[in-house]
Length: 222
Image (cartoon, rainbow, N blue to C red; front, top):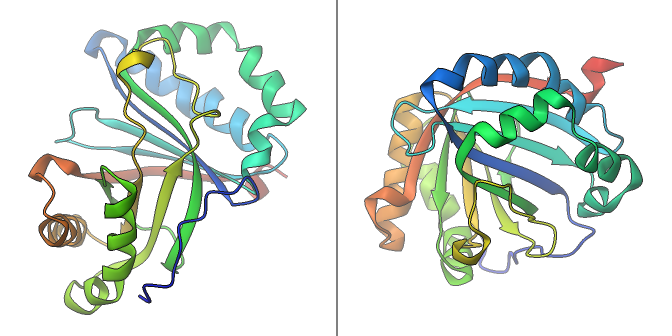
């Protein structure tokens, strides 16, 4: 990957909402039913949203990850989104209050290479903009050396749009960029994440793998 690739931070960039959370075991069944029968469809139906995806990890400190792609970051200030965000259903309010250790980040997307939805993703917490830029320069080598990688992108949080959910202490939150690596297998995701962490000299807990639970595209609802 050419070092000339620059992280896109503009409001015209594609957007991606990241919700990374834990949930108490006794609330997990209701949490999953809410996501799978109401919340995914509700978000994917908002004008300007392209898709909703849910993931689960057996090893990450927060086992549930949800990602939502939008046409641009402007969608998060649109009237339809604000209406949904400010007028949550009773079921949503109950589950938002049950979630804990939650990260909510509205990100600008820098698409690096590839296309498609992997069965597993590696989520790398990059820590700094410098590491994000270094990661961009390493992606060609990663794809040559690790099989099963189908797409990569960098997510850069917007500090104004990344309003925290109730379970996150806003005074302690860290707005760091992420790299998302879509892969075909768990082994590929783990290998790709470990490769990037080693090259960037990050700590081992900076990388987490998640299996795709399901993907819902806005076009599926039409």
